Image (cartoon, rainbow, N blue to C red; front, side):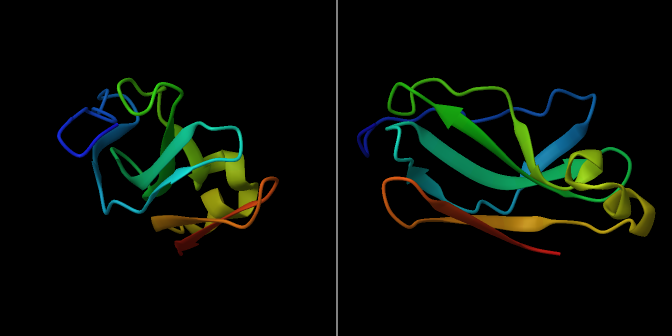
Length: 103
């Protein structure tokens, strides 16, 4: 993707998220895919750190996936009602990517 191109990474689908905010980062993963991170504003419950992948340089994006939050992170997250926001990524080398967010 060049700086003159624009694309929509994600639109709220109305079932889990009412909106997206707090953009985190866009990185090139070791596989060559792009990963964009941002905060998922949930209709019910705490916010989640989410992301979307692109294999074509940012022209199209995958469905949003939860990186931190919800029952995918662990049962304690659901019980405590913790929110996760402002996800950011750091590519360490050709095999490791670290993800951070505020809880």
